[in-house]
Length: 581
Ligand code: PEP
Ligand code: MG
Image (cartoon, rainbow, N blue to C red):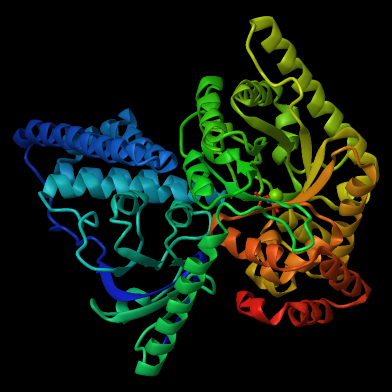
């Protein structure tokens, strides 16, 4: 049987199912006498202390492993546990309604979670899960019930749950968790973000799976397609095992490329960098020999916390990345929030078209203090390596000028404070709005580089929401209209000369079907998720640029997406075809 869920973190895994059952209900009658209220309050206070201590230990361990964003999620949970409004709600229920601490916790947590769950914003709605997670921890402590411990698994498993909470996932023994499947959750849930970070394939929103599987049953989880297969016949198991072996062999053989220059066979150098979301990503990039960081999504540093990080905290994170990269270029993208990435403490308005709304550079230009703090932190970090700065979602020259004006103020303030920075820090923009692509020949004069954000450029060019499953078959970056814009951008940078360049950091850069085309169109910098880096390197280093140019030229003469994709697949040299699947 095949279950379809949301492809939340990529990869393929075949492993025995381990179900995490939803918590059992406790006895219905939880009434107490007036004499018992004091003892119940004391039990609650003690449970909060224990929960906070447990959460602090989990956060410390995550931090020690370099999982900074994981530790921040857990720290935020600790704040939920110790929040006075929770304590007040529980106290009122114990003393006025005369119910046990455990029931008072349940009711109060449900009330608080319902407030989050009722919010329009998808990101905030997901926070209801954090509140419930804290409630479950407190309930378990009050009932003396052991929590499902995923930290010491003895064999490889595919976890299947109603909901896998961030704190459970953080404590999981990553070496044994081969896949994650949950009935709830979406692509913006913390579980998805963490699974990707940990390199574990995940299928979320997979309804009905928990009741349909048994512990120990073999599951084939495909995080690329969002499917979970059960009741696997032997030949299917064998085929999946062969596919896994093939993927593993390919990965091993690709490792010989680590340390080799990224150059086409006719000697054209390409900068092949990694996309990261935190300093731990930089360590991974170093291990696979990335030529740099082509997209550091700094907004993740601003998520899962109660207020924005200070200049010092931002400096520490950016500096860590620059130092890890040891002089290789690091493109730090300024805050790209809004759209599907909301940050609750910023209280941005709820909008009916968030991708067309108050987003990214628009927020930074409207809130110069926020922008200034980040720019000062990036500039200060630039003293520790080769930093480049990049503004997201630029739609016009005026926006570049306005952003640069604040950048200049940040530089002036650092000079006044006597703080060091790289005075020649290159400044670039993301090309993800069609107007910027069309104006590339003008915009290039105002910047040092372009990086094409094909994820957004595709949705804006085709008027197809990148998150909307109803129109997902219309979302295709190989559409000729999108490719013409990419060509304009590459040509504008090429014509400008003077060391200016055009790169790409959207998911298209990591798609092997696009490599010859993008190379042939003249892009000289590719930034991809670390898992895809070596396979893209293999393609780039196996072909001649002149061949890629011929392939691209022919692709640009074709008029439909299908013709283009067929041509690109057919143009892939036979020995590289296996990368296309
Ligand atoms: C893009 O839009 O292609 C991009 C890289 O930015 P993000 O995916 O963070 O919006
Ligand atoms: Mg984008």
